[in-house]
Amino acid sequence: MEENIILELLEVNQQLLDCIAAADWDTYEKLCDPGLTCFEPEAMGQLVTGMAFHQFYFQLGGATEPYNTTMASPNVRFMGDVAVISYVRLNQRVDLDGVPTTRAIEETRVWQMQEGAWKHVHCHRSLAQS
Ligand code: GLY
Image 1 (cartoon, rainbow, N blue to C red):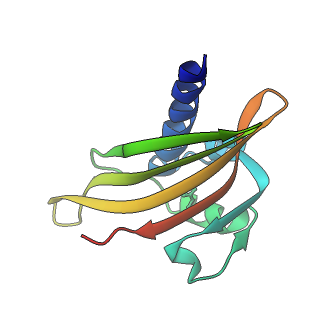
Image 2: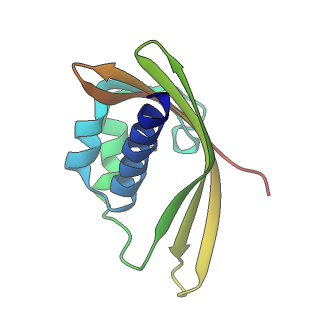
């Protein structure tokens, strides 16, 4: 039972990462609580609340070259209707010179079950030291 919920959460989190890479705003908006809070490098040390900050990046368009996004060693913890997932996100992309690159980002994302669907309510992202 718990295993199924873990798989479901990993799937929904992967869907979130994939829609970010594809700049698919409709899916991102559907998966997130409108009051999403976030610490991430782009926010320059500030806690950002709401969706507008994130929408800015979706307006720039998605990856045009082949890409892949991996959650490395994900850990999932449930606390009632809340789940916390932590992992290192590996972004495989092609840079402007056509060279394949990989970037590692430490991520913690918090999901809450709201009316039968997982909603993303908080994330904390930081660039991993190599
Ligand atoms: N910067 C948006 C997200 O990682 O959810």
